[in-house]
Image (tube, rainbow, N blue to C red):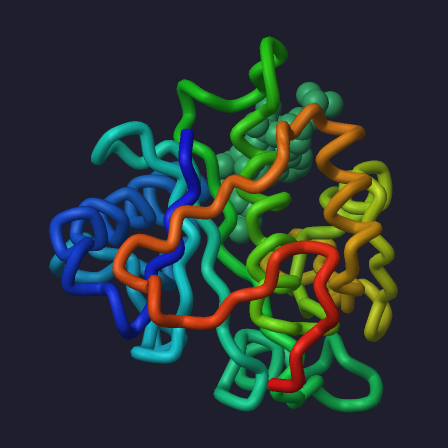
Length: 218
Ligand code: COA
């Protein structure tokens, strides 16, 4: 699996894959997870946080999607600022060096794998690599509380932004996670991720940081 960076500048190279992606999100979030508020007549799960500024990291095998993650700049509206502000006691984070992660998934037949690195770990390592590459200092995440020990166990420094709240019968919490080299090397070593996973197709002109280089100013 390679993890492709898809953003405003190279979306045209992934038009068919993005169409599959939004349909897959419908299947996973509306059908499987039963987040029925997200249901739309066109059976694509797409919302107001899917904008030109949104970055998608998609784990692909050929043109087939295995895993995905969405990154939204926190200077734009986010899940935390618009839908769940009660989860941040000091108000939602709005900083150019912080992006919000959401919609992490692995396709059902690739979950819980034990041979080799799990797709779930690869996509998260790739998110950390992306954050380092563009000079971010943190991610925010609105997550179901069961996920928090998993973040800590993969070596990420995650700090709650508020108390857990019951949302649709699910304990939910907002956290901020440091983006740093250690978080990347820890998840790689603890989860057997072999190293850099990102593919920057069509983005060659964009400056990006090799891990270990000084962090650029945003
Ligand atoms: N509630 C509680 N625990 C959950 C869960 C849920 N909705 N989804 C997964 N878990 C737990 C599993 O019980 C499992 O625990 P175990 O290892 O002790 O059995 C563990 O997380 C691993 O989950 P699994 O699905 O087997 O494998 P994975 O690590 O490869 O993938 C996800 C994890 C979350 C990426 C995958 O389950 C998925 O894509 N789920 C649908 C999308 C989703 O809910 N994403 C999170 C919100 S955006």
